[in-house]
Amino acid sequence: MNRDINKLKEIAVEVRKNIIKMLTESQSGHPGGSLSAVEILTSLYFSEMRVDPKNPKWEDRDRFILSKGHAAPVLYAVLAEKGFFDKSELMTLRKIDSNLQGHPSIKNTPGVDMSTGSLGQGLSVANGMALAAKLDNKDYRVYILLGDGELEEGQVWEAAMTAAHYKLDNVTAFVDFNGLQIDGPCTQVMNVTPIAEKFRAFGWNVIEIDGHDYNQIFDAIDKAKATKGMPTVIVAKTIKGKGVSFMENQVGWHGTAPNKEQCEQALQELGGAING
Amino acid sequence: MANLATREAYGKALVELGKENKNIVVLDADLSKSTKTVDFAKVFPERFFNVGIAEADLVGTAAGLATCGKIPFASTFAMFAAGRAFEQIRNSVCYPKLNVKIAATHAGLTVGEDGASHQSVEDIALMRSIPNMTVICPADDVETMAAIKAASEYYGPVYIRLGRSSVPTINDRPDYKFEIGKAVLLREGKDVSIFATGIMVSEALKAAEELQNEGIEAEVINIHTIKPIDEDAIVNSVKKTKAAVTCEEHNIIGGLGSAVCEVLAEKCPAPVKRVGIKDTFGESGKPAELLKKYGLTKDDIIKAVKEAIASK
Image 1 (tube, one colour):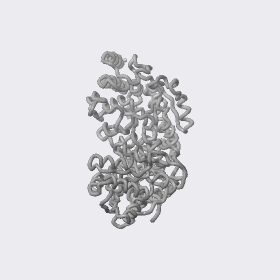
Image 2: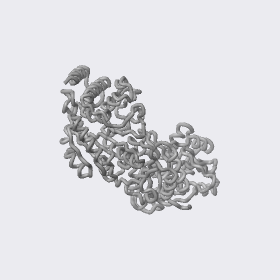
Image 3: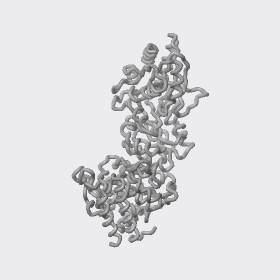
Image 4: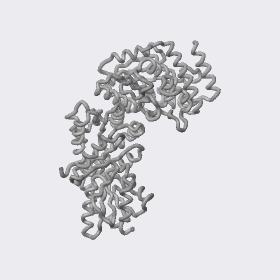
């Protein structure tokens, strides 16, 4: 599949701008953890996953679960960019009668493979999809994005055991390791580190990367696909709020929407990034 | 097939369904010998998944399988399915309306000796409060076999409440027909309507038999589907009898009694007496001892019937 990194960087700028615009319009939602996952999602949807926007329920498609469902804006922006629905719908985020619910909903949005939002539940679902693939001898792969704070949920570790026990090498989990959660730095609220060692102890293949570096993301995906007999987790070090200077690494931008002035400043910064 | 626990019938039903439909998969959380999913596991090991003692993961994994066209039956004790995994059932199964069947065994007091920690008296209330959920509580082995088959043919989440202890077979007749949401009239009467579910159906029949000797003609209706509840059957019966008694092995708050009261209050107000667990936890003991101590016998039903009739 096409791994034109310059093209991906252009798409990432568009996605980031749309995240900011959507959140400004809705005046509610989560910018920080959406912006930190842009490179991961654009890599998957534009250069890796087997999906067909015209046939979102295609049985043989690769699956993606946004287990950290509050980052819905990045998923919606990417799905719209990919053509699952019209970009004009993005401005209806979180509004009454919208297809774009505050958290992803399989019933509302074409391209959403699982409803999420209540943290900790996605990995179990990914395992179920992966078991189904094995039962049916299908070669589709299951990708999932977990938050680092989300790893505090016990169900994640139940599912981590299950994935290793059933040797689900068709599961690739990303951890958006941006280090912040609502109440503060993860290390202060409830220390989730060391993440890599935890997954290793649970029987996973672990790869640690810079989650904003496309080359490292693709290299990790290739290694995950080549690994047999065990699931892979890609612990992606990221910057919460990435791309908008005043949001980067700021706890306060977890779940706060920008106002008009902040939006303009953010768009200006992001617009500049196209040429940068 | 007289006197079989509904969980035993569940195990048999799974094996039969497994032969007919290769999309049936079964999941358990380290209780397969008790829930009887072990029967399926022996015949179809490749379609059986034990996730260990992890009920949240059990439900989520089932949800994932369902998104890919499988028909998962996920089993554990009612306490840990409806209780421990409530929110997974709510958010990972019912909200996306996935085709997951939660077959929960060891419901109610008749778990017996394990005591209150394992006696789910609130699962019907929890499950019926979730949008998109169907709640079925079979009365005997025949009904369980039929309910499991019907659940597999219906698309959407279903909670099936099963028991640990043996119950008499009451539906072993050629014209027995099971339809989700359709109550079964077991005995006609004009003086009072007894609505019963699960293991209390056979007690209700015994009570009606005895009441006849006293000149009271009780109508007995088996409400095997608590949601969606058969409003017409309830209203039509009470229009005639003008009094109702509900019987369930569940807290009187939130279960069948509440569901019947909701229907009658809006559509056909009448005196109602609820036979059930009176908002208390159970304890260790033999099933029969517990049913007696907590007021779930035919004698309790008879008393309630007389009170209901007196309130007309």
